[in-house]
Length: 190
Image: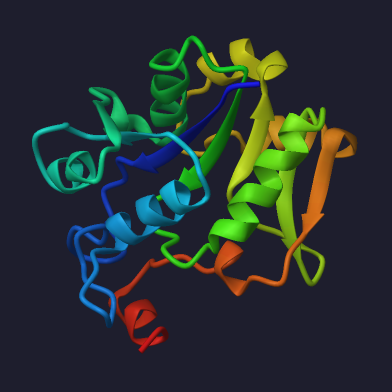
């Protein structure tokens, strides 16, 4: 089963006030680069969806060996970016959808969600203390629904419509719940 890791990295970062994916973690690593490295460390081939492949975080991700795809409709919302990533990976049997503003998801958590998909789950997500986190896995049966996504809610509605099909993967990883929204979030990792 070919599970494609999609790194959604096309958000505007309005709440952050700047390009949050290029912002540096305490160790100096850009937020988006850290998220990509974790996917790569989990043994995944990574396709990153960005606003423009030649700008922002795109070149940094390409230097890691990540396939970078620009999404002309990224400003219309995460649904457009996710659909763009699925469209750019027609050979995939499933997708592991990760957010580039979540730089502390452990590779073991990523691998566990991918294993649930490979084991036959239609939908899979890490769960910590009863809360569902990221990345979220989608089997190939959702291809058409993912391609039809629009707006800024991503695949939230699809998950809400099929809660009984989501396999929760227990993890001991706070990174599956923590994203970077404002500059103070970077200080939390110091």
